[in-house]
Image (cartoon, one colour):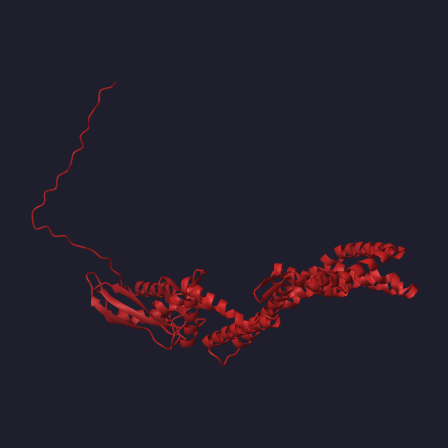
Length: 443
């Protein structure tokens, strides 16, 4: 153990001794002063240039990815100017003096350029906290490499470990695992999203098959990335049998609904019972499907609300799919007219009125049938077809009823209201009640 500590600390002590000897030279302070001055100049220049360039960059339309990169560059104008000034200063010092007298400038240039490059590239990650964590970890590793202390730091982190039987967990292993797993999972998800977008654009596949293929590819890529990351850092995958057993117990006790919704989602995609764009009714919810997810189905109603309905409900409950086999939907509008009306004329006017409404489909003509002799009216049923139920059902019924009202009013056909006749079998005496006024004495 002592030999390991000596082997770790010796390179660090040598580097520290060399640094302390270099600090005592006057050129060290000259370089530090020059770096501070150049950094102040770059901050001043950035505060002037950044707002103007950023305002122009916001005119970029239709390419959000390019806009993110451009904005990331513009918000680091001070660092770009600082790097350029350091390049000029380093070139001038090496041209007129010894190379050893510009070592700090060269070091500052390498660290600044690494920070600039890593922070710009990390902007690809949309989550700000994750982006900052990746930037700092990446820059710390590059800085250790530039300072040539990676071996010493790695050995030091490897000594901080916890042993559990034959399995040894060190700080170095945790850091490497976190970095590698994050990178592989991020690449798998990004590549899965890319493949899913390409599949969604394929017109040869049905919408359900597109969603199913996209979800399966993403799941397989994430599983493969996780296994690759674990094997890369040296974790024996056979040790995951205990973890899989724990997951099985968890599924048995608390994750039944999650697994049920996931399996139900796969079944929905396989049997093609619903697909994006279908108009459905589920209980009191009427709307059209916007997206199929692994756990739920997104349904948008006519009032703009978005319902996230679990996949299991589409398997266990009764679902009305208005556009399952075709897009045609038949609607019924009952109405009644007075007994002095001609039924033949009423049916003709009703068909003409329904045909005059724009959303009523022309290929399937409306029909009107007399259904019964009611108590106060002759009752009819008007039927017509539409192809766009997602545009609403109540509004089209209202338009057809309004067209009926106009047609009947123009042709003198009345719509009766219910009335009742009451016949008294025994004589009824009507008495008028008189109101009695009681005067109270004044107090």
